[in-house]
Image (cartoon, rainbow, N blue to C red; front, top):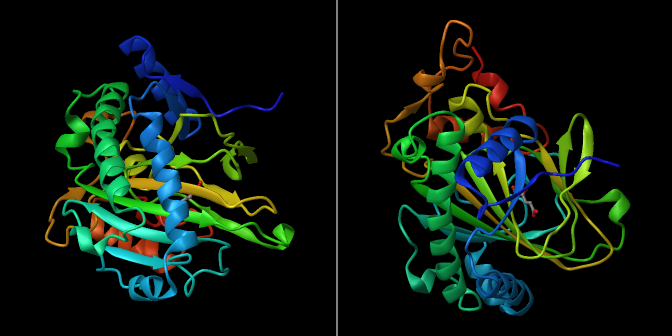
Amino acid sequence: ESPQVPVVDLRSSRSEVVDRIRAACEDWGFLQIVGHGIPEIVMDAMIDGVRRFHEEASGEEKERLYSREPGRAVKYHSNFDLFQGRVANWRDTLYCQMAPKQPSSNELPAACREVLLEYAEHVMKLGSTLFELLSESLGLMPNHLEDMDCKQGQILLSHYYPPCPEPEITIGTSQHSDSGFLSVLLQDQIGGLQVLHNNNWVDVTPIPSALVINVGDLLQLISNDRFKSVEHRVLSQSIGPRVSVACFFSSHFNQASTRVYGPIKELISEETPPLYKETLVRDYVAHYYSKGLGGKSALEDFRL
Ligand code: AKG
């Protein structure tokens, strides 16, 4: 039987949850969580809202939102690296930066405005829980990661993958690892997301009411390789559409931030010397974006 991405029920005992999260982040860089407290009705409404936007918003509205400008908080486009990467991905995306500054309500498309705000708030709360659990699983005080501003910024990418007539020559989302600290993914029941594990692509099989959690490059960097930021991709399929909402926690949009990130000093010892240089988040992310998707090379360039 092929290995499966670990599933963790957050209603289990604290020590069990911490142990299972540690194991998943060390071994897979990915897990699915259930019992996370976000109501199913909100998750379903979020998926519906995204589908409504992509299917029903007018051409004029999409044209008004279309942008590839780094500074814009709300924008609509296909893959962000269309002009840097090697391929055009078979998907469209609504990009919304929800924190540190929430977009004004008229910047968000009417088709999913309310549910975006509601879902973003739920994921923000869940983010606090997850960063506490991750801190504890690294042997740190519960508030350690949040105090490092790992959760200061929140971006929601609402993806829409249309059914594809020629899926064998097409890709939904190119192979990549995520740049931020942590990602929380809501996916519908269509499937197609795969994670690289021991050099094999493993399906992240949709589980009703579960969320997919994965470690980003910056968490791998500050955890000094304890936790792994792992490459993943989305296949395109003849069935669909598939809808997913990826939430990225980072702090890279804060241009004023002078905070540098390097391996956490509590995790450094003679046996485990620092493996990475210190970096500003915006410098890391600028490097990541300049490379485009298609491999996990950005982090390697920060290795000592
Ligand atoms: C991303 O937005 O970085 C993804 O990997 C999307 C994953 C998905 O659509 O399931």
